[in-house]
Length: 506
Picture (cartoon, rainbow, N blue to C red):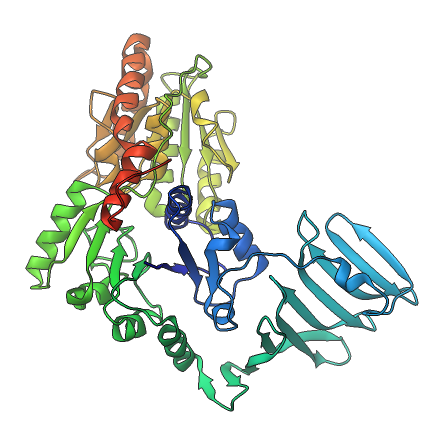
């Protein structure tokens, strides 16, 4: 059995989808299940670093281009020593700074070698008269070379013109040629392909069969899905829905009714073996929606996109009257409602304060800054930027989520797992999953209410949650209880059951 996970993204900011893929990578590795996470476009070092930091190892990562050179992963093993010999690159001086080695000739940079912490080469860039000529990228050996031309001879800027891809024997396999907005692939045997033909060629080269499993985490506007369905040779297709299939009014700014992210999956649901959703409520909703549109209903499994550690986080270090928010900072997350609610609550309890973790849209953050400034609220409302908040939840008393929609809410799960009281809007699905009204916090009905009235209601709920210390402690205990179903062991067992593997280690 081979497992391929489509698809890692290039150039995007991280989301819950990527966190879920990282969790899956660690789970599969602990259970000795081989999985390859596929970049459908050649990743930059930034792309690789972001996913590696999520727990996806290099031996689990491949791209379609590198796969076609005969490699099965992106592990590094080529040592720097092979390049710094004068017989290979003539030079008269070496300068080393952190993980970068510069080879100097006549006081000019001739080569820049970037390595990992174990002196394995990641890339080597070659220069002439301070202008980059080409860069070679290494894994187990030289894998591909980028060739640059000069776009402006006076300025001396370089631009990528083509890539050469080499097999492990050092033989040229194909070239990727950039011509204006077009990309073509030229193979050593004379074949020439455009980008879509190259995707199809890659899918065919995977030689999928009924023993293979293809997991898809993103469904919309991606050029691999149709070829995968067409040339999958009855491999098992597992499609993971990270958001809902249908949006009600005001839930999603960019979409009302059908979620076009998954339109193609639903249209051809008869070729899908399993849909994975995060909650039982979402499973029922998906069944009803497929019935409504007279679509085929495949197997639907409920598997959370992440898990908490089994160990209960006990802390006596919570800061009184503290609220934490952790999410992308965008309008659909309702950060404006949260800030306005805290400003309202602060009129009645001047000790309440809010820390907001995350990054987001500059325009929206600018609007939020103006709101905070106009109410002189900087003393008690703070933007903390993007951080790993897993170790920080324990210092707060309350977690706030005013998102209009959460298919699951990994930060909600982590906050509950750290015993925080919860407060948020009564919205699908995550808030209702982790916030039990009057048990571990408060769910606020925001329907049919103007913003001013809703803000007042939020503010009063924030005041109330801090009013009774004994009640707040009971909320903390209930959150621990709610989160206990989402341990690594419990979630891991669901994946192992789906894959037909009996044991689960985590």
